[in-house]
Amino acid sequence: MARRSAAALATSGEVLRLIRTGEAVTRAEIGRVTGLSRPAVALRVTELLDSNLVVEDTEGPSTGGRPPARLRFNASGGVVLVASLGASRTQIAVCDLAGEVVERSEIAIDVEEGPDVVLPLLMDTWEKLLGGRPVSDVCGVGMGVPATVEFAAGRTESARVMASWTGVVIPPVIAARFPVPVFLDNDVNVIAIGEHHVVYAGEADDLLFVKVSTRIGSGVIAGGRILRGALGAAGEIGHIPVRDGGGVLCRCGTLDCLDSVASGTAILRDLRARGKDVAGIADVVALVRAGDAETMAVIREAARRLGEVVASAVNLLNPAVVVLGGDVAEAFQPLVSGVREVVYRRSTALATRNLRIERSRLGPGAGITGCALMVLDHILAPEAVDAAIARAAGASGGLPGSSGLGVLDKTVQGAF
Image (cartoon, rainbow, N blue to C red):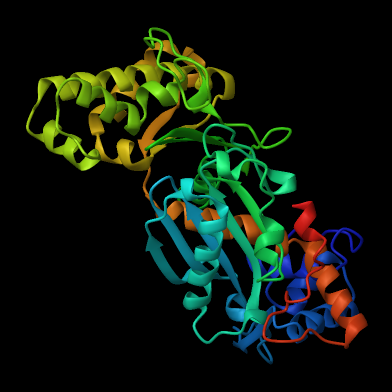
């Protein structure tokens, strides 16, 4: 292992990061990696053990003499509450500190009913999923919503799309019931985070996730991290205008946005205009399987329009992989094939030289994973862990409850 200066890795939070990643899992390894003295390593490890963030496994392998005790991140030391809201379907879960699902539920929620209806329902569901577990075990909350989100403020900004949500600052509402850091992002961003972490981490650091469902949106992973832009509006691919759109009015108030001509809603509208009796995507799937020519034509036209916009995004972002997810993309291989054909034809040769265009491998579960990772990325950051330990030491000499993160500085909620 490469030796680092003690100044660079001098805190308990940094030591926890080494243990979580497996870079250093014994006291001796921590000392070699950080350059810290034995007493300094012992102090930091003791703080992490006392905070219940780390546990000692039974004796590790010996290289001669007494085997060293191995340190392991205690993922069961607390939980995070997560919810990935869609326009028609919502995934709700309780996850451990490694992002693994402990309890999960899927419910039908009409997000258009607004936060006064949706948020209490979410919080009631979390309490049920917690069962008898104390609220003090909750370390953070993460949500993805089908709206544009000003990430730093935790505020939804979606006039004319989800009007009742516009300007709502969600973290204080959730924190009134669960007094922990609360993080809010666009639903496609959290899906992109989850898909990248589980499927492509270490393989592709630049990824474009396009969700084709009731609506169309995208999440951009650049250099291994989500790209939100200055305020959180990056990835609004659904509101890029297309050529030959026919003058269709979009929910945002402009004409011929990609969302208004190629989404699941648009496909159903166009098929009904042709006299097809389709109540939902399942009916469209049945028509495709039956070989209905008009339905196939509508799918191909949606694929062409989507492909042209994705091609422009590929030229701009040069991702290693484009992932197509959402109900529509997962149901129609012809749509994925059509997008692939257009992108390879219209994007530059260099941008497509090694480009892969694939369907989502995780499906709806990616949103839950992404929400959990969004929270954990913040509450387990070295500076956040150090702040929690310092606050606990100042208050009582140790961290209360079963979670070492129960006393995280609540100002983190406004910092994101």
